[in-house]
Image (cartoon, rainbow, N blue to C red; front, side):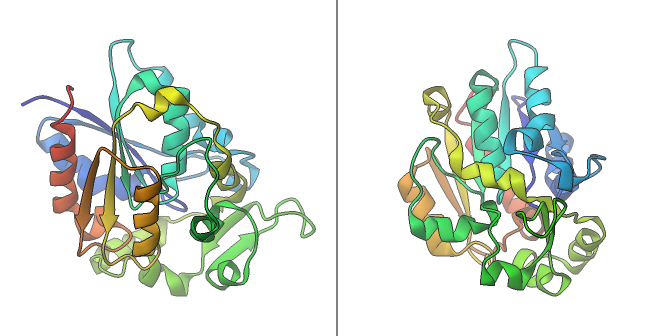
Length: 263
């Protein structure tokens, strides 16, 4: 069996910990798995309120890719708004990425104008406090109330329904102890990643989540239409967090997708 190296990129509020089931399955079956904590996330000690930009937030991922041996490439796998971090990394280090997998993740072609209907979904990235955002997110104003918020965290009463509506209770319980505020200024940069022709050549895979209460089905379909991936998969029974609700099926998808490229 050919060995692949999968590098996982988490979404807002999460950390490398959320991929533990996938990492375990891959390692047991002879593959490598690295779960990155972006700046201010997971066990990274940075205060998320001090993260100033998307590149600042992504620095741990950039550092990892920059230190890979010259002849090594990895498969990047992202979730939710982590898709923006992954896309930025593809633009910075295209020679280090053999494939990019978006799991219910923000997949927006760098250098393009995002349609208003998609911006509505990506409002989490904008740093703007809209009525719906205020409903489900608690904001911290580290630079004072007259400025944009510096971090955001989902209100506890919405976490299970938005993130984990089909996930095992024990994983929801685990997540409630580990979720952290997410840096707003990082997400603001996702809609402004400049065009990068080399990154566009990297094979992309999109994994749609069928029972997702966070990322509407029609919005996921729109992203796929606007920037068609090389491969597309549907996890019909998955909530937003396929790594918890459908880990076995997602594992099989990752291996099937990876089988189309050389390790």
